[in-house]
Amino acid sequence: MCGDCGCSSAETITLEERVMARNDALAMANRDLLAARRVRAINLMSSPGSGKTTLLERTVRDARRPIAVIEGDQRTPLDAERIRRAGAPAVQINTGAGCHLDAAMTRRAIQDLDLVRDSLLFIENVGNLICPALFDLGEEASVVIVSVTEGADKPLKYPHMFQAADLVVINKVDLLPYVDFDLGACRAHIATVNPAATIMAVSATRGDGLPQWYDWLY
Ligand SMILES: Nc1nc2c(ncn2[C@@H]2O[C@H](COP(=O)(O)OP(=O)(O)O)[C@@H](O)[C@H]2O)c(=O)[nH]1
Ligand SMILES: [Mg+2]
Figure 1 (cartoon, rainbow, N blue to C red):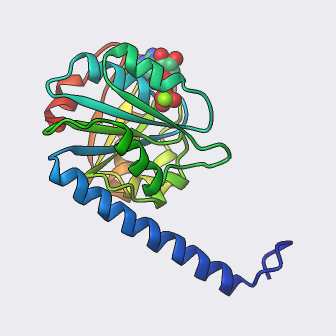
Figure 2 (cartoon, rainbow, N blue to C red):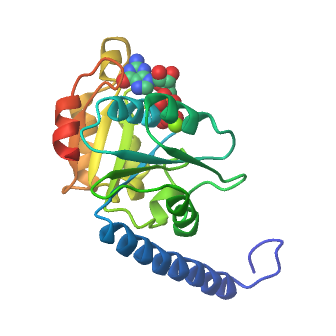
Figure 3 (cartoon, protein in one colour):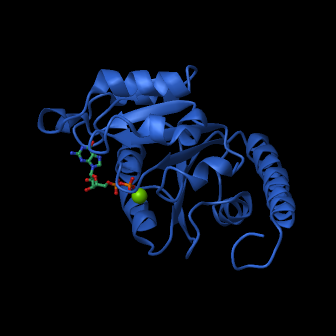
């Protein structure tokens, strides 16, 4: 039995499997829809405050292709407003108590956005290093941001998130002189949990590493 809820753990596992299977089917449908419009979708994940929205604002201002953004937060339209001010269409999803976006939410947001052919779609997931890694949204690539104020050990502590990443961005390198953060160790930890991941160090505010980010993106 699992605590107070009265259900057996076997029933819980079956329900979880059904939820994940349904999500995976919807994610595949999203992937097909996006591919048909030649839209490259990127799932952007990190702890709250790592700089996801800041990097997106900068990317929108420097855009070489049309960009649209889906913003996920538990509450407030704040991040979608930031993206619109930077110059791109954005849809905000508020998950309430939820800790991640799922494929159904993403589908509704895709329908609300008038996606342009040959464009980029960023999906800024709800900020945490755990749940978003479990849910396929139909993205083409996953990007995880870790910032130098979070500590170099996070890839080891939250390996599932870093294993899901095609690219890991180490952000806020402008703060390296002021924080105790071992960049080499962080790179090594990322490579330990995900040897295939591309790793780049950037400062979304000062601009370090942005040429590499744009090379990867375009
Ligand atoms: N020093 C520094 N601050 C940054 C950088 N990127 C983001 N920030 C700041 O970090 C805070 C959180 O950024 P935000 O983009 O909202 O993070 P999000 O929660 O991941 O979307 C804001 O105060 C940003 O100005 C950076 O490269 N360097
Ligand atoms: Mg944000």
